[in-house]
Every structure is written in structure tokens, then in C-alpha cells.
Length: 130
Image (cartoon, rainbow, N blue to C red; front, side, top):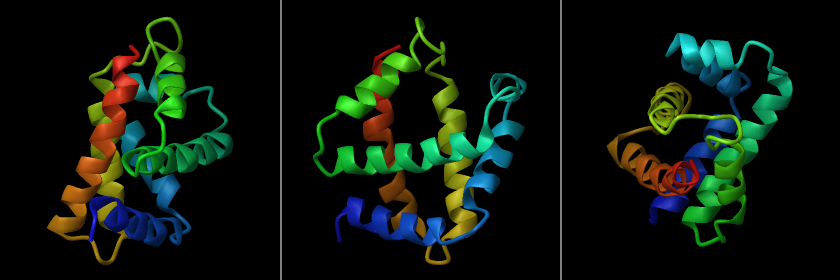
């Protein structure tokens, strides 16, 4: 099975969990005072919807979709935009991987490696916009 297929199935299992996105933000906000500060004034219900779509965009890019949406995200998160430094993405990835491991009952090394491969491909596009 292709990594993108493994990830789509895993993501479906994660999204079926009512607390997946809340748990992600709990982990992510706990990862750094800078992250907590950046999200202090954020509309979290809206942010969770953006995250849901953003993860899907990363998977779709790995499946062959053009990088248009990821480049736009890179631009909005760039030095001139939200100024999200490239090293902060590793905190995002670590928090996401921790949350996936908690919520996907079929999580194993194969699923973990598939997620890392799929996410890194798209996150590299976003970071390149910095």
C-alpha cells in the first residue's frame, strides 16, 4: 500500500475521534512558550477547521495535487506574513505525530513512516516560502 493511502486511512481514524484536534492543540501549545503566545488571540474552533483542511492539503499534495495551496500557506506564514520560523514546523510535526499515535488504534512503524514521508514533502514546500 502506498504511503498516501496508509495516511488517508490513518487520518480517517484520527478524524473519527472527537478529541483529535483538541489533543493536537494541547500538545502543540505545550511544546513552546512562543507557540502559546502566537495562539493566544486565535479563534480555536476556526483554527481546528483550518488544521483539518491543511492536513488534507498536505496529503493531497503528496498524492500529486499541485502545490498551489501549500505555496499560499507558505506565503501567509512567511517572514512577511505570520513570520512562522522554519524550525517551528518540527514542533508542529512532533505534536501531530504524538496525537496521531494516541488516536489511531492501528498506528505502527509503517504508519508512522508513511505520515513522516507525506507530511515532510508538503511542509518542505511551506517552509521554502519563508
